[in-house]
Each structure stands twice: as structure tokens, then as C-alpha cells.
Length: 192
Image (cartoon, rainbow, N blue to C red; front, side):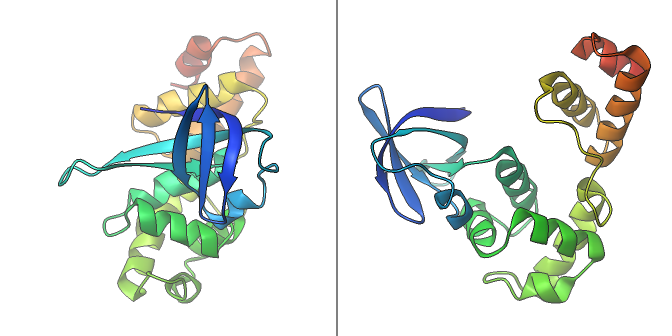
């Protein structure tokens, strides 16, 4: 899997970019929200990616995101039955991550179903399946992005079956108890 691309921005449109990485140009589909954060063509760029392989015909597509929050929301969206990568990217183009979080947390199916490609049933599914993963109206307990140890520990707990908000909360409590020098392993053990 390709986790990110770091290279020179060769081409740029609101929905697609080409990133030159060591002489190889990677075509990447992006949401409009990421386009607004891109540098000018010819400058260095780093995009977080999602590598999608279509099992039916074997085609591959890269989806790119300027921020961790955009990629995390994209991954949550495509975890819902009926929402594929293309629709997930379109949703992120039409609504901000904050707006989506607030609509899902508030159970606002009217706002969600107003998004292109989302009907009433899909909007209800979004609320039911993602409300616990998103957290309350203000979102999950924040983990400082600068401290990768906390993020890694929270992801480890999620892989063990914790809900996202619960994992982050448990990691923050463990970090408060153990102090700043705790390793990821120590944080996970204390959170368990």
C-alpha cells in the first residue's frame, strides 16, 4: 500500500493532481478541500494517500489528501456499505470534515442526504454506523497530532476493537498517568 507521496507537484486541477516522485508521475484523485491546500505547480508537495484496487477488473486508483483529518474521514466514509472511494471523495469535496462530523454526531440526516450521491437511507446508515466512531457533537477527545506516540497507541487500541473515541480517551488517561516519556507499548498496556 502507498501511504503517502512526497515529490514535486507536476499538474494540478481541483479534482486531480500529478505528483512527480523521482521521475515517476503519480496520478492522484483529490477532494476539492485538498486542492485549496496545495502549493503552486513545480513546488514540493506531500499527499497522504489511499490506494484502491478494484477487485472486479483489477484497476487501481490513488486518492490523495492534504491532511490526516481528511484521510481519516475518507476511510470512515468508505467503510459504509454503498459508499465507494469515488463517492467518498465527492462527499469530502462537497462538505468540510468538521461539517460532516457535526452532522453525523447530531444525527442530521437531512443535511447528509442533501449531499450529492447520498440518499436518505445512506444518510441514516452514516449516522448509525459512524456516530460512535466520530464521538459527540464536538468530536472525539483530541490527540495532539505532534505526538505520534498517542496516535499510534490509539490506533493500536482501535485494532483491538475499541471505538475511536474510547481509544483516544483511554490513551490520554494513560499518558496523564505515565508521563511524557511513556512508549507506545506502555501506553497501550496502561490503557487496557
